[in-house]
Image (cartoon, rainbow, N blue to C red; front, side, top):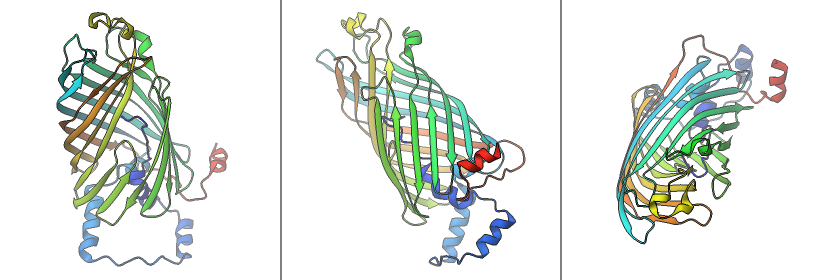
Amino acid sequence: MGPASLWALSAPDAQDLQNEIQTNSPADEKEQKDVTPVQKPALTKEEQNFNKEAEKQSPSFQQKMWTGTQGGYETNIEYDYVGRASTNEGHGENLNVDESYFDVRHVVMRHTLLAFLVQTGVEYQHMGFGVPNSALIPDRLDSLTADVGIDFRWSEKDLLHLEGRPGFYTDWRGAGWDAFNTPLDIGYTRVVSKRFQWVVGGSLNTWRSSRVLGAGGFRWQMNDRWKLKFYLPQPDIEYKARPDLTMTFGADVRGDSYRVGPHFGDSKGAPGLNNALVDYQEVRVGPGFSWNIRPLIEINFMAGYMTGRQYNFHNDGPKLNGSGAPFVNLMVHALFKMPGEEQYIPQRNEVSIQNIFNFL
């Protein structure tokens, strides 16, 4: 989750998508024969074998979403722990607050028409904070949401994503339907070249103190081993140490908006915070790795330092800041394609809006 969930279809794998998504027809093959090939620096035999093994052992998730059978499903399970960080608890005192985080997300996806990938699913996130009942800091912040999105490619170079996350954002203390919200995200990726893509995106959240947030960035494949991803919410630099293992170093910007219960402030001496909205944000930095235990099943690990956190209550409420603390993060990410015949999805530049209307 991020303050401007800059989705890139993903910019991390846009080139993998462009290179590997196509299933060419005979006409396509003829067109390719008529084009003078671009000369590329020759790879050593060792480099060729490494790249071949990397494609086999750790294939691109985005590439596999767009190729193969018509449907599939994706699952993420994550657990984090943040150590005790000195945090302003709201009454002029500081507490040492630790955090436990759990997230599970399951999404089903299906190709439709010529260039759409529709997804729907469910996600549950929980943050638990070790605080006494008298503190103005919530002891938990949770979200239970649907995930409704659509990815659209109208050429090899243009990728668009729209996503809504309707659901409950709450401390589960009786806010009821007042805790229901529908944030919206949009992201656009432009594939400039084989090694460089840029992305822009935005987020609309009517609960957030800043309702509209935007951001931009880029993805640069410096060479076959090194990759730079400079965009929110998880900018990082990657090094492929083995075909099945990628080392990383980067940041993780997290945050969302929640509504606390109708009696949240009563026992804390702050009745003005009953049913209040609060923005939460934290920033983490550190090294990690991504290990494919099988193709399309990967374990991601990150450990480092949370540089700080903030609870920002709306309507002139308090802003409670926390200092840094160490953290560890563990996530399992898996993609499965449903049985069936492989689909042919045109991805040439000629695919346009008009093609789609003609298809109907």
